[in-house]
Image 1: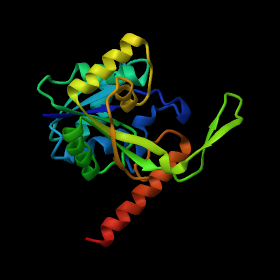
Image 2 (image 1 turned 90 degrees about the vertical axis):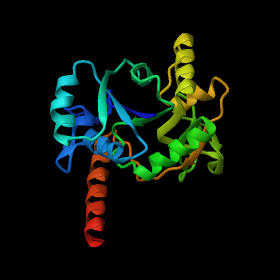
Image 3 (image 1 turned 120 degrees about the vertical axis):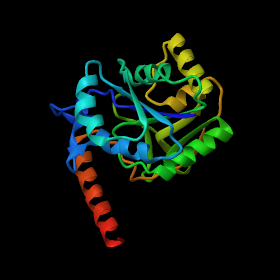
Image 4 (image 1 turned 45 degrees about the horizontal axis):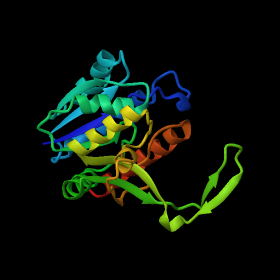
Length: 235
């Protein structure tokens, strides 16, 4: 069994909007709804756990989940203080029959089903696989004052994305260890790395945008418009 954990428990501070970013509408439906539809359409996903802020269960069910008429079972889990706390809560809700867990940001609505499948297939082989894209700008390592310490070799730098797929036992072990150590990370692959396990990275897409700030909404609207026009042309 393969379970998707969709993490949508952020407060959206950087968006500077009264509405949490996962509930902001693009093309008439919430960002989170776009994401759920992709995972619902993926035939390698058996069920979904959606992690949302405490107190949002009724709102999320009424405004996001119910209108979609999803085919797959979806279960709600309560978000935590940090992203890693939210993922951990999601993991606690995963059925023990699950072999592969796929973790994805709820505000990355442009993920494709073929990318999800590739992650799952590779995770079944290696235990851990994430999407990433080659760095396309020069990467600078800086100190807390904003001064450049060194320039990183661009060819050896990848920008991590989600989904990230793992064997259930492996990602659970990594999260439990991080909790015991008081280690906080926004990247699940890092938790697996720090317990000495290898993580495979495969090619993602620059279109797999994480909507975080106001400017990202402009890009998202443009991307949806161009995608809709392309589909219309090829009908």
